[in-house]
Image (cartoon, rainbow, N blue to C red; front, side, top):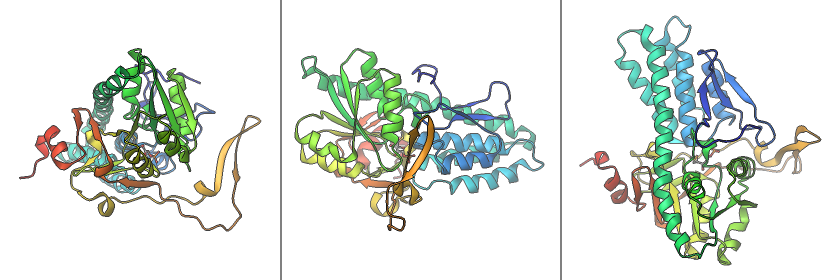
Length: 368
Ligand code: MRU
């Protein structure tokens, strides 16, 4: 296993020996195997996103941008191929807004290009910029979120700050550092005692398989819990702070994130525990206001619920845990209304989960 090194770690990159190949970590195999997967055609990028080799809103966007770079290579009409690829990529996962954002950004570059011969180099630069900017965004979230952890730590007499997180909004969900994890990594590096309660995050187990793995790789103390344990821990004062990520946040501050986030927010509210959402500005859907009616919620394959994956005697296996014909529903995300959110941690600072709060930090998005 390669260590997740917070300085030079990346989740997607151009193959050093062949610039017609993009490389990713196949996150479906973690924590058991660290397998680097080649993406050679844009169709590989679509598969990587929809089958969740890569996941997490910022990384989904970056993968789409790199897939459009692949679409521009070795074809007679790159602009047409890129548009076909863009349409397919847009369908690959509906909830994370970064996907459409990154595709739009690349398409804007294409429209401005004077010759189709320039497209590979232009898209390569844009995809690289998207990744570099994402690292800086995560760093900004880390710096601002650190202040919250420091404030809580000041009242704990050296005791660990207990932070609960859901899903994986870590380095693996971004290019590096993560969103929800960035403040935690910054605090840990600064010598502040932190301990993370890691929600397992059924059905795909992003918590047990990804967050726990990367926290361990970074030496951050953590404990894995089942998804339903959070409320109990909060009632017994074992959680000081909740930080989650988000896949799409409306301009009024409603947050779509991995299914189960809403229940954590309800429990946090009932127990007066601060509930923050780490929010890269690339994840704000400025066109939507009401999360409950305007955010598309992805429904995924029933097998994610009926079956479970793991390793037995060194072999990756999956087993069905249900009767063969059990009816299943598998909503992948839910919406936490802004009223349950203490604040949004963005790369520009922390604000209220409201239109006014967001516009104070992003005044360029005012419409009137
Ligand atoms: O289905 P996933 O694994 O793509 O869902 C990811 C999440 O819900 C994360 O919490 C969210 O994308 C934030 S990632 C910075």
